[in-house]
Image (tube, rainbow, N blue to C red; front, side, top):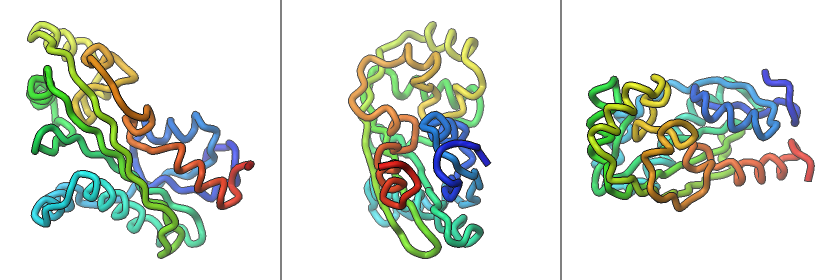
Length: 204
């Protein structure tokens, strides 16, 4: 439990240290209880149904919230997930250095969309569904830059969708960003704060 603002009735259904850091930075008291869902299977099902990236992000977020809510009766549970869409492709977090290299090469000189979905539940009731999109343009960086980045970045910098974090060395890979900072981090924070205020967990 994080000893911060609010009364601790918020549960973050995610293992993401970045999402936890976003909440902690905003002074939110919360409990972190990661959901165990088959994200790959959910994405396959969404694609087979012709869902948009926005719809899929909400489905993933809802699956996380629904998995965790029964373990915390009466508490608010927030599920959030993120998709990177480049052209017609949905990119996953790279598993290792070579996949990170392939991701960086694929995104080089192109624009992509980061879609963050959020679902807030209490028990079986959905209190909020929200999705936001950020558009990011990557520099036409060199192979030498990719080598340098892979050699210099920490493992946590590579193990994210897109293989680079805006809040780290990955900032050097970007040419332009259009969108909310918290959306890029994977948690639409401002809409969540509105929910918490509406539930009386934060000061109006």
